[in-house]
Amino acid sequence: MISFDNVTKFYTDGTVAVDRLSFVAPSSKITMLVGPSGCGKTTSLRMINRLIEPSSGVIALNGQSTREMDVVQLRRKIGYVIQNAGLFPHKTVRDNVAVTARLNGATRHAARKTALDLLDRVGLSPEMGQRYPWQLSGGQQQRVGVARALAADPEFMLMDEPFSAVDPVVREQLQDEFLRLQSAIGKTIIMVTHDIDEAMKLGDRVAVFRPGGRLAQIDTPAMLLNHPGDAFVADFIGRDRGYRKLAFSAIPSGLALSGEPCAAVGMPVAEARERALGQWILVTDNNLPLGWFDISQEKAQILAGDLNLSSTFAPLSGSLRQLMDAVLSSPSGRGIVVDDNRQLLGSVNIEQAFGAAHQPMPVEQRHAI
Ligand code: ADP
Ligand code: MG
Image 1: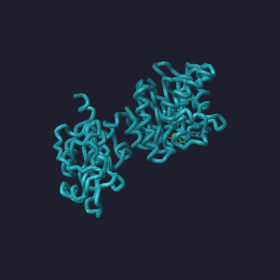
Image 2: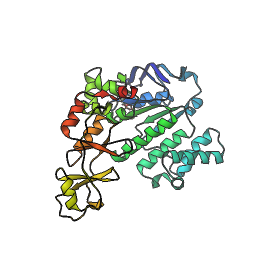
Image 3: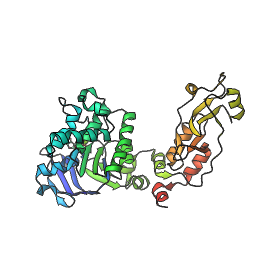
Image 4: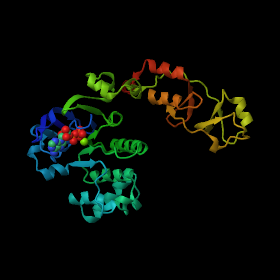
């Protein structure tokens, strides 16, 4: 647990970067700090490992004030990940990670082994370990940054916009990998972002800052969406929060699915035309949806290369946002619903999806049942 009790930071020029900040980041959870630029997020983070000293107030780790701790000891307990990873350019990737383990007293051999294990955990092969940072993509460098922060096996992790320098597709991958990693390692994490979608996706709890270094609200993502505390929070969370809210709502268990006719790769198009409900037919492989085929094409056979792969398939155990996305991304206007093994269950049209969204049930409630 990391706690802030009435913490203020003012710089000598009179800037109040953080103003009477109090909140708790619970153990083994991800707490996101989000807010507009200059609202004191980085300052708050850097006060935890005392790269910046608070002007007043108390920051405590598991109840112990950081001011009373030796700063070297304190930083050993805390992994720190920054944007652009901050890797040593003249060390190999493996040694970049190993150096943290060495600092914590591991032998050279043990440190290298730890480094390779951690690189594997973040999805990088041993071959990657031989390279230098500049030989890696931005996303791969960010993974190394995470591995390096984990090398001392710290109880706490501070992450300052770790994924914001990479393109949106890679960012989503990194976020998904990070959530998987966290579910295995259960660190106490505080992460800074300016991206509200990232905050809502990754955070168990999200602290929204307002300009002037003030905390506007801290809550679970679902609570923030459903009960924004004031106009600033509501506005910051965004105009499309009705849509975002769907990400936190389960598909109703009683949702009626329609049967969806299917074709297979290799099937004569004439046969597919007889089955199809309209211009598009779903192509499956052993009940696994692959994509859509346009039967108006002058083709003899359905070929894998002719499939429209643009649509997403919604798991029935998933969210209403996934269901809606399945409908809106489908060229046929019918959203495909699958089970947890990605096997076809049926389809819904836009009216059915809207009907389900009309009276959403919170995901948490559904899980509790
Ligand atoms: P964020 O990370 O939310 O963008 P920061 O914590 O970096 O914000 O900055 C908070 C405020 O403190 C900003 O107004 C910034 O200009 C100011 N600030 C940051 N560092 C210093 C400093 N060393 N001296 C004076 N003002 C600073
Ligand atoms: Mg910042």
